[in-house]
Length: 330
Image (cartoon, rainbow, N blue to C red; front, top):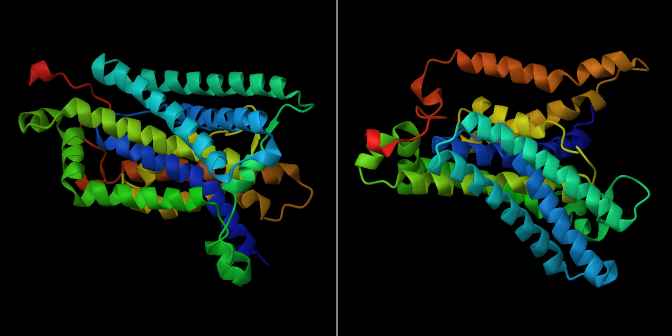
């Protein structure tokens, strides 16, 4: 029989990076910026956190680590690295009005190269015999669960067996949905994404909203990379470890019709599809297992096709998405 009790927690853990990436990208796109650099930003956020944790462990030794600093240093480094990537994107696309598609793709290429370069450098510094960095001491603090989770049976395994970043990701997505839908700031942000000329005429600072939304979204996406390394892989960094999760996160934005709260369940669904091949019996036929690995990508294509057929205005992307704002043309 299919083991849901073991499958659901792994699907949720697999979906948390997607949730962070899609939440960050939704905030960014609501401001009219199409940031295709999310995969690279997740890489930079992850390697920045890894670098902070690595040098802290090297300085004090794994046995003398402070629980607070073990969490605070990687977290701050991750957010700083992600913020700088978002700031770079905004400078190029908002201030210099560069093409958003080209800029995003360039940031993805840069972020992956940045992560692999510094990750390889840390591997050499550590003197590891394998091409990976292991930060078990720091990871143990990120992976700590609620103390009573193991005593509540299947309920604890499904709902309480995650590190604090998993719950933080869900909270951030719900807060983002509330801000976008229920607050004046969210109304102004949506106005900037729909019609920056009209928003500017109403006295809204278009450039400021684009900068703040994009940089905030980048930091949230970076947390997804940090979660993947510190929690999902138990503190193990290796080159090209993320695969294509960043691109799935971008596709998830369209699947959720730009609603971060819908992204919570949608990311867990995609996380489950990502690991479904491990739970479907395929015997010794490796070719069948490879076909099962295609499931999340096939579903992504189907979702994109269905999304393109929706005619409701509320299910469409922001009207100015991907377009530069020229104030002098208003």
